[in-house]
Length: 468
Ligand SMILES: Nc1ncnc2c1ncn2[C@@H]1O[C@H](COP(=O)(O)OP(=O)(O)OP(=O)(O)O)[C@@H](O)[C@H]1O
Image 1 (cartoon, helix red, strand yellow):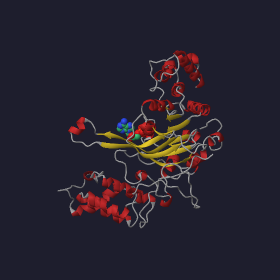
Image 2: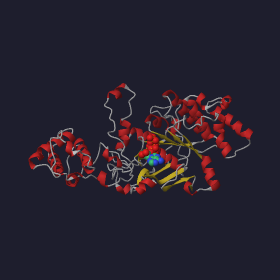
Image 3: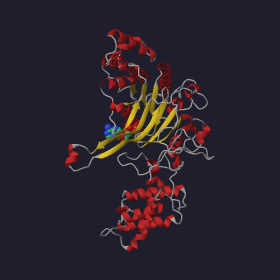
Image 4: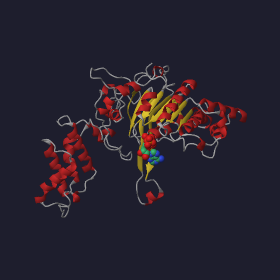
């Protein structure tokens, strides 16, 4: 990680050479899974509601090498914080393992677990809520030393003074309270506390998101200096691509509980492979006027609920590159319109009674035959932004006709039989992508049906340690 002397692409030469000395990762995350259970209260059980799994983290695998900064990026709700907290064992996993220095952290107990808790620390986003307003900052930073009974009282106080100085505060301030400090200073206090036990590994969970932009850079620079000085390894969680770009050696892109792409930061930013990574990058505001004038694409819709994630590729409900069946010729905007329509029919998310401003009246669950064509036309107008080309227009009308008898299943089946895509039937495995010239890109596995050949499948982790 480095922020002080950025080169042309915003990463310093130093950061590009900061990793790669070690074949064995410091941290190896293997198929990590964390489900929460909703509808699981006594009342729910009395009401007969079944518990529902919230799949916050759903089988992620990656490695972190000593001295590097791995970025974990994705929209809000994708499972980044849950991943960070679960791998630190602040939450227990529902599946998978995490090896730290060769030991599965979920097997640790007693003194081994205590040792792990000193070695792996976290810095949270919000320095306002993560500090106890009734404790002086000296006591706050000293607390982990007290809990772990490190040194004498005098030695602990001396260490607190050193730490405060080291993070850019004055040792004279240790009797002050959090409200006497600015946001950036409070984050420095949080960092000092995280460093108190001389950890090797820090999870930085949105460490600058609550700060003013001008202060963000200072805190990132401080984290960079501390990494060099104390040989720290970072997992940096952020939804902010500019933060990730400037400080990370490698980047893992997370979507709805899964890692969709992972690779060296430079490659991810210069040559993103997964449509989600591309869409995330497209949605970043541009710095230069030329680029600002270019149309900025935003990702359509919201992240679906992790209670009921889409089948197959989870990004397919928003993806601008969904793959049509081999025998269907259709442009992407028409295919997207039909996919969205299918989704609404399959979830019965269309109010049939209100179509055409209530001009159609269902009797015994069906419309009179004379009204069906008007009803279909009104439905098309409501559900489609633009008319479809042949033969798709006819197929869609057939499906909509089934809704005139409220036969949702027949409508859904009519479209499914024509338009079912590999993106919905099959969860893509991580594969090493191929460039247009036929070169494979071994360090950038991607989970997308657009790429690769199943003979070269890999799991989520890069095949080799980060490049020098
Ligand atoms: N204790 C919990 N119980 C139930 N669901 C939870 C719990 N904690 C998190 N979730 C759900 O898990 C999903 C992932 O949340 P998480 O906070 O890990 O995402 P994130 O990518 O870090 O987003 P953000 O940046 O908004 O925190 C979300 O849908 C969230 O609502």
